[in-house]
Image (tube, rainbow, N blue to C red; front, side):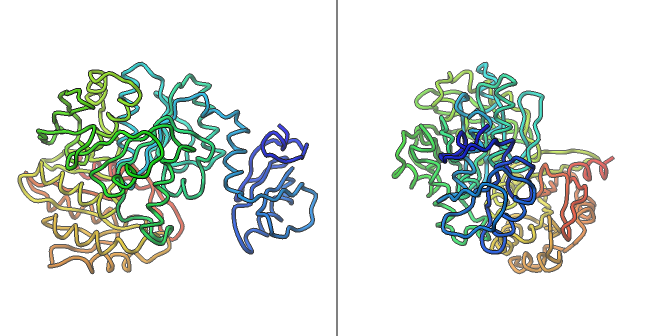
Length: 469
């Protein structure tokens, strides 16, 4: 494929792939995504690897080399568009559904996929838990993969018979223009709460990234949660048709008569004036909200209400999302909750099904948004009868420092600190009695733990099942 077929430039060099970061093969079209000294290093690296072309920011100097140097006024935009073109623009042939929000993206995409499968569609799923089409899994490294990986996955899914792709669209992906050039049939928004300030700097910048998905250049229609302030803002400013959902404010899709137990929740849903009974496999009002979001997406796509209800009932759970394990008379919930809002919702859901005490095991990731640590400590202290503060993925930070910052938000002495996550889980299980619930939050489906830059195998689920043998 010629460079001129990937970019709007007059260059006839043949391209064998898309390169970026530390990935560049001979004949690739390489995109320089860094700034300053790293930008120069990128250009030298790509030229040394034999790149056919090197796309770099306009107005900067490039070293001499054998590659074709191509200035761009927006390298990340061109990176996404060239990646789409290289793989034959697979998104154009698929019904694309994108879900954004701080929490709930994974659950909403899984429920949506199950509803669409119930309606007879072949649905590809891309997100935090990986990428799959039916039983087939695809290599996938990020919640929203980088453009070459994303379009490669979409190409493979399309070739494997998919007619629809449901994907999580992170705020990072929007800020970095990873989905530029994709027009979603439906874009959905779940909520916006404290997270990622290490990247965005302020909640307003974080909000602005989410808002960008609801522009006519990115989506044909939207679904938004108007129980959330940002959802209300989207409903007022979006330039596309919207369907709203919620339970606290007037909306097109809402629910009443919520009930919950250990096996899940039930409620009556009004889907744009079609009323139906709903049953979902996990408790929690936030899960009811996730079901409403997925149902609203399905309604926008013209799926019948009875089919939607059957699809929701057909969900058997989402890995690491309020996943209940029982053994030796103990009840354990494993959940991915890693934000203040996520932890709050998970603990409230646990309280709904718990006759005795709620015992929480949690930590916070290192080298990430530090502002949420004390907030999560405060929530755990208020909503737990006892908490075990432990390591999540400390990365390059000392676990003890992270735990100290979490503990600064705790009021009272209803907690202990255990830097070793396995020891923390074992300690909580030893405390657990009949009627209690142990909530292990933060890592969910993850099966690695990163300490001092080294990832080792660690799974909360495997650890619990081993300890409860």
